[in-house]
Each structure stands twice: as structure tokens, then as C-alpha cells.
Length: 377
Image (cartoon, one colour):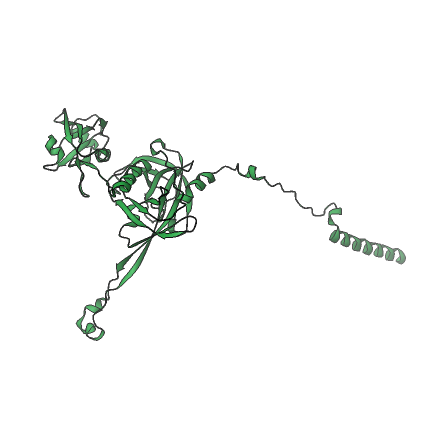
């Protein structure tokens, strides 16, 4: 019995030793041995078919630049230095200043080096530096700006620039996919995606002339002046403002339509300034209460709240309390659309208006004037 037990023990020991060697050196021979998984890798042409907007982003990103502005600001001095006792020992304090750095974005619009951005990005700047997507940096000069639409044009001296392709903002519809490209918080060029949430946003108190595209594509500080492009990478707007109580994106951003931006840009590039029509009136929207009091069927139109004496509207016979229904053949929806339409008129030309006075419609002709400095229309 003892002999059989020794034979069994020796056999088991040899078997375990063989199993150990095989599992270490030739594990694939065992039924439970580990095997290398077979992985399939897509070919290059297959990988390019993955859904996304990389082609649109790749088309537009080389045209978007980062803008860094700086200016000197005075630092309040210590109030103790107003005491003659301290001035006696420490002398008259020197005026202290520090450099304030701001961030923004811009869009290359021509191979000649013109860049479109927001007015508030470069406002009061002593120095403007532009950084291109390829890493090049240079100082830029201001060609002109228009505070009333919050647009400005810069120029740099670099060659080999990639200008953006202009799209058609009048063809943009609510629900369309859009990409916002810019430099949020100074982290570097970034692309965010969203949809067009609304069109024709106005009466927001941001600019004098408002006709914003609203989007939920994330727009944050530093995105101002950057590009809003469609799914093909074509420019449809200039990102300019956000609605936020925290300073970050809450999904409500506003962009200036490229149709308005291009008109302003071309005037600045040609003349260095923007010329607008002016008739000399103050207007307000028709509220439901005003519509009832004037016995109007709806709230369309604009109430003339004031008329500048000696202005074009006064000379044409328009008076406070009139309601402007049409301007040069275009129906007036509200006060904002009226101001935008007046601005498009050429100074010196005659424009027809239809007004409502005392329940009776009247047709008048106005000789359009040139809009003076910022103020009421």
C-alpha cells in the first residue's frame, strides 16, 4: 500500500511540473490558455466616413485668429497719501498704472490681411496683437470701427493668409447646425457645436442696431469676434454676446448676421467709417395697450415718440403720436426693424412713408439725412 502511495505521489508531482512548464512556455496549447484577441482596424478611407463636422471646422479654423489687447489703467493710490503729514515724509506720490490684458477673437476676411472682430474687443486698446492658427503673431492696426453694431476691422501685414468663405445668413433657419469658433477664456482656439435657436433677436439693449442670430453653441468670454459657421464651414455670423448671470455660457448666445457684418465691414474698408440714413425721430414699440388705444388690429408698426425739430421727418410733416406703418415699401414690424431699415437708406435720397394719424393713413415723402454721432435715431 505504501508503495502504491509513493507511485501516485511521484506521478502527481511530475504531472504538475509538466503542466507548469507547458502553461508558462506554451499556454496556447491548453484549452483554457490565454489568446490574443483579433482586432480589426478601419482603413483610412473608412475612418473618414465617421459622422461629424471636422471638415467644416477644418475649413474655417485657419481663418479664425486670437486677439490680445492691452491698455494702461490708473491704479488708485493709497488714501493715506492725501494726508500732508505722510507726504512730508514720503514725498508726492507718483501716478501708478498697470497693464490690463483682454482676450478676443477675429476672422480673416481677405488675403490682404483684413480681420473682422467686435468693437468692444479692441475698444480703448493701446496695443493689439493677433495670433494666427499656425502660430504666427503680429501687431495689428485698427482700420475703423462701428460701436453701433459692435463691429471693427483690423489689418495685419502677413501673407499666406486663409480668408473665410462668407455664407448667406438670410438662408439660415431655426434648427440649423452651427459651429462657434474662437478663443474662450484664452485656452486656445476652440470649436463648439449647437443649433440656431432663434432669428431676428432685437430690443436686447446690446447695440443700437440689432438683428441677432441666437444659438446654443457654447460662447464664452474670449469668443467675442469669432466665427459662427454653418455645417459647410461658411461664415454666417460674428459671435458678440451671451446671456449669462455667471459669466459662462448658459446656452443663449448672440451673433451678428454676416449680411449686416459684411455691409459694415465693406464701408469701413472703403471709407474708414460707416454712413447711415437718418430721419430724426425717437420711436417705441406698439404694445397691446397702445394697439387698443389706437384701435390697431395688431402691434405691428412703430410709434413716433419724438421728432427732432429741423430734421428730415419734421420737414416732411411727421409729428409725435404718428404711427409709422411702412417705410420705402417695407412693412414696419417694430421699432428695431424701423431703425435698421432707416440705416440702410442712402442719405440725400427720397423715401416714401406711410403713417397713421388720428385713425387715418397718410403717405409722405422724406429726404433722408446722414446719421450724426451716436444718439437717438
